[in-house]
Length: 178
Image (cartoon, rainbow, N blue to C red):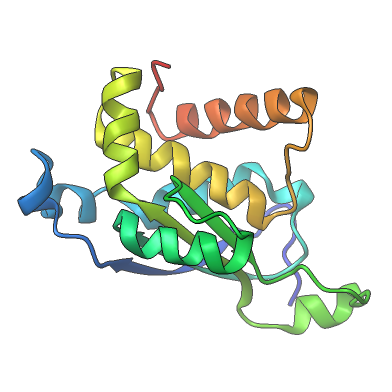
């Protein structure tokens, strides 16, 4: 069954927390894990619904990790041997068109993987004068937009994407102070 305007989106979130928050920063791991990631992502997908491929259930992975792991991935996939804040690996990026009926038949529709370095996020949160949780949500929203095909090759598209991130954070009661 294809999503309709009145049919709520379902989200299967695979949250992988491989970072030891307690040894690194003031934010407790339980606080981050209790951050209601699934409802936030569901809210974001509902807001972005007009731009989504039709499906009843969407699936994605959110991995919270350290600089060393994200640097390895950044070097392997982007040829940049340095840590970064967020990487997004979209599952829907294909070189051939997939008919909408086939996409809708996939249950759940896998959107891809978002990987966030908590170490880099913590540095950025301090620089931007907001909490680590706000920074993680900001980066997760950025990664989600990439999974859905957003990109920022120029200043105008970057501004549009950052504006959309602000909107998504506002929808879940957060505000970035940067």
